[in-house]
Length: 172
Image (cartoon, rainbow, N blue to C red; front, side, top):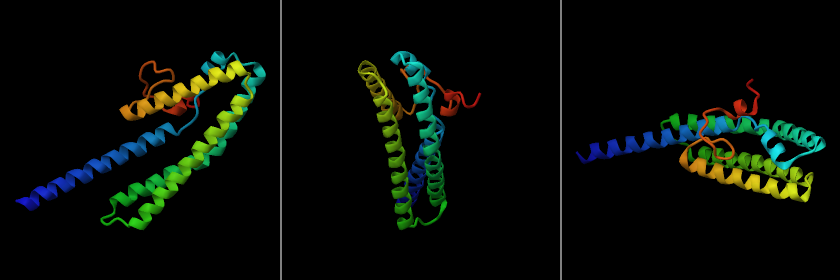
């Protein structure tokens, strides 16, 4: 009797963990699709045409640099999923995969950070202040959305079920 209860608890625990990981992998893949269009930000910052063009070019360059990292990250997460399907988990392989995932995520974050630093440098002081407030708002909403499991539009108005690619206009 005790053995059956333990087996049921173990199966339920494994199922819950697999479901949580699958959800995380799916959400990560959807969010990593593409950057959003900066039209709202350009309006808020009152950018000149030159500043708009510089931001567009920088955003495109950064997205192109990040694309191979995102593809590799998706591939590594697929390997983690395959590892879950195996009857026995190779702990060394698991650790290598998660170390590689962490390294890729760090590279993506660094590229995003450098993009924001370059953007900030092209702005006048009053624009920089508004830009930093915008970035802070985005960080706050993303953290809140992650903890709630929701996808929200920038600015926190309502819920949206579109992918980043659809939001950026690339899917049109």
